[in-house]
Length: 256
Image (cartoon, rainbow, N blue to C red; front, side):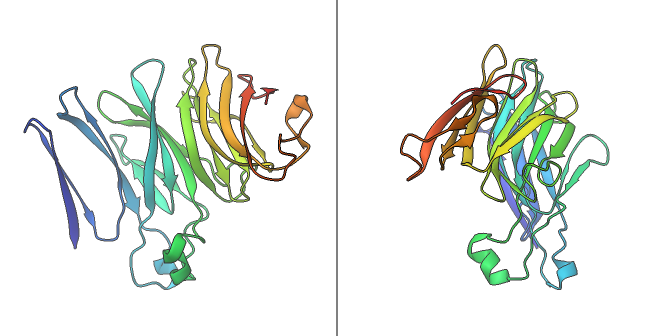
């Protein structure tokens, strides 16, 4: 069975048709001009997960969602970021770039999964996309490739800096706040870190000097922030506090 949706420009102009198999949850990015007329559509395609290997007769949807788009300093590219489960493929003018989650969805407790995705291992993806035509230059994922977050990462926010690098924040599988800086040319991780005392990081940005700022939930007392030493939350660790943190371009804490 095929499901389809149609997007038509508000002025009655160009039309884009989108379709997918039932139970698939492909992701899409659409560029329009200032009048809302579609210029291009990039589809991040679902690929079979391993549910059938686990004995389930249905197909498993893998893609989850595009959650943020940030322009690069060169105005020629955008960073597309979000979460996925299983395998996804980005178009690049050839056979595509496929990202495989080494910890795919575990539907051994299918009722529990449907009730709240509690046994799904989310992974965060980042892709550099050419703004002129939607071609993907590179795509990468973070969970299970960086020791700081172990098996999974749920996307919390993203941004680019003036040097063309990508900043990504979120929450690891042990509810530890996580931040990474990726090389904008290659997608390689330049540095990353995680804090058990930070429950989640929700937003990130950079200033004109490429210093990094993020906002997060903090829970605990006397947790170390690198060269800053121990930090005690204002409420003495009795409940969650909101904090803002400044890092140098190299990832060293400046203030909390």
